[in-house]
Image (cartoon, rainbow, N blue to C red; front, side, top):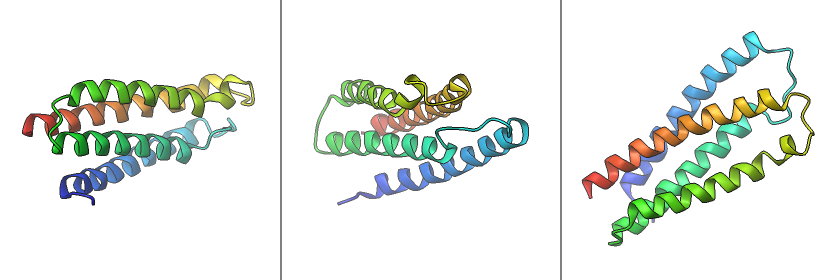
Length: 129
């Protein structure tokens, strides 16, 4: 069962992701439209939003069940998220992209923005517990 806090977080995350995607899409396609991307921008945002939601949801679940190790769990899940990011970027690593540096920048800027959003939200949640 999804609790109200998780639902509120997911709705805020979707709004944040859509806003950030709109800004990123506007900048990229107005200034760098000649570059063909192997990884579409929408897939980067879906990947980041889903992983942030999973991490937040799992920590929310464990802490609401009485676990005292929210920060340790966050660190472990973040390392797992980094491993998933490497798997997500395997096409760039294996040379399938014509402009891997641009694609890496397109991935890592939103990745760190989403990570910052996640840290702020989790810190607020854990302080309230």
